Length: 97
Image (cartoon, rainbow, N blue to C red):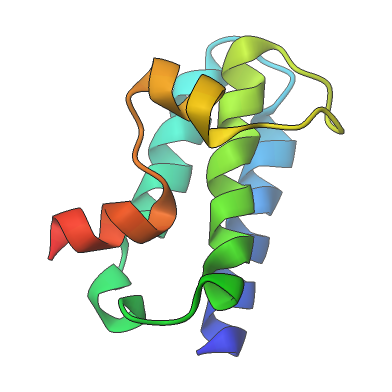
């Protein structure tokens, strides 16, 4: 499953980097990242948190775009994701199931 998670994260980051400079593209990035995070997440449910960490970083990247944060700024679950009304990846999987 680690290879699948790594491939999904790489695909999402590629899409985010490619579209990051455009204002209109922010919504597209959010849609693409959300779609890739939700795809087959029932298979990934129950994996340990360290395995899901790459997917959480994928979710944090568009949040940084929305708030105009620097690439290396820290995204905390309590601030950015709560303001966007996004569940963290592990809770998102549980909610979808």
